Amino acid sequence: MNSPKFQKRSLFMLAYVVFALLPIYWMVNMSFKTNNEIVAGFSLFPIHFTWDNYKLILTDPAWYSGYINSLIYVGMNTAISLLVALPAAYAFSRYSFLGDKHVFFWLLTNRMTPPAVFLLPFFQLYTSVGLMDTHIAVALVHLLFNVPLAVWILEGFMSGIPREIDETAYIDGYSFPRFFIRIFIPLIKAGVGVAAFFCFMFSWVELLLARTLTSVNAKPITAIMTRTVSASGMDWATLAAAGVLTIVPGAIVIWFVRNYIAKGFAMGRV
Image 1: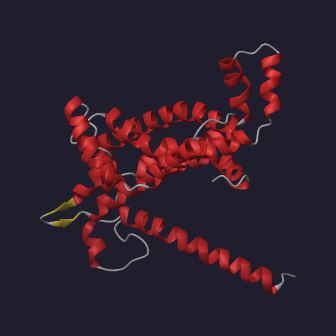
Image 2: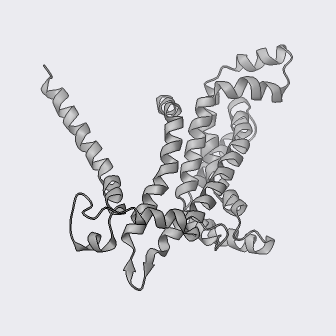
Image 3: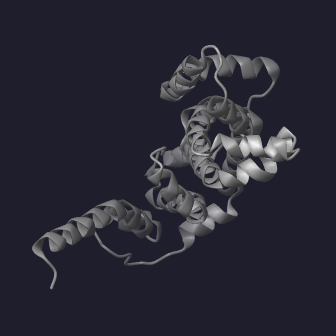
């Protein structure tokens, strides 16, 4: 027989799950309605079920190109962030040098700074060098925030690996690149998965920099979704369908790295 304490915990968890999933359910519910039905009144289920909103997004280049653009620069940013953060995190984990703690703290301050602070410098720089409205422009500007985060996460995982492994590999004749790629990275694959997830997530949802540094060719889906406002009002149904499709890539990434994220929380580094 369940104790009252257990029943209270179960009730609390149920209430929390309902509270967390309610906005997602409501967005999915709206995505299968027409605008007239949405503004007409309250309903828990679509009365006139329709796929037209999804058909519009998947067939209109003005819509689906935004998802392609977002996936391109987010993938580029995640790959570059890991390539830069892995050796940097190893240096912070294994070596002591002048000002190491100050540099490590300075990296984190970049993550604390609002994106609007860096908007004007990057806008002028990219305009001068011809990088405006390109995927690499957004991917590079997001490094400012994702590299410090990745370094911070990976450094925690690397510090948990005994230094004796490094020394043993050198005694066995391993060069540093071979040791780092074939031995060390597999040992911290959970940390790499966690860092990749957070880099993907923060780059995927960032709007201000991505919208300002692009116009047509590299416009992300988050910026395209703001175009649903017109003189006739808000296109609620299309916006809801676009929101549902925006969740899908993140949900797929979470599915693949879910075990790594749990391990990251267990290590106290996430």
